[in-house]
Image (cartoon, rainbow, N blue to C red; front, top):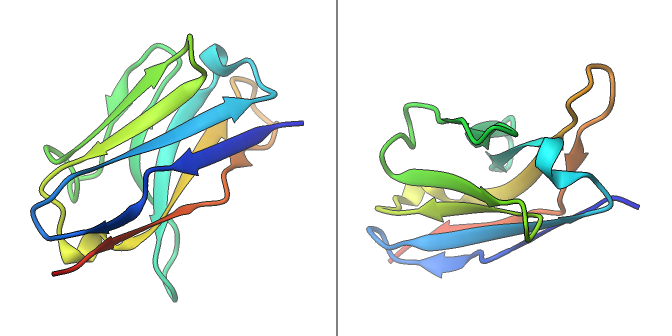
Length: 118
């Protein structure tokens, strides 16, 4: 059974930082590309950071320079360090695992709420 369990969300003031974690089980973690997405009510889920099995990272312009994704294959965990947070970063953040073989389903975590507010 595949599980992705996110943690680390919460309430933070503008300009603050949070570190999200996603612990994976039931998959061969090291061969999966991992990513973080976020979603606010009424909007589509959007990518905020991704990391390949070879640890190449990619970000959209909206978070470039503020967010950093990393992975620890020994712990089957992916992290999202979020700095200089803004109110518009408020969302539910989801962990995603994408298999190395085309045609197989992605896996998703249950989400963790991040609220940026003074």
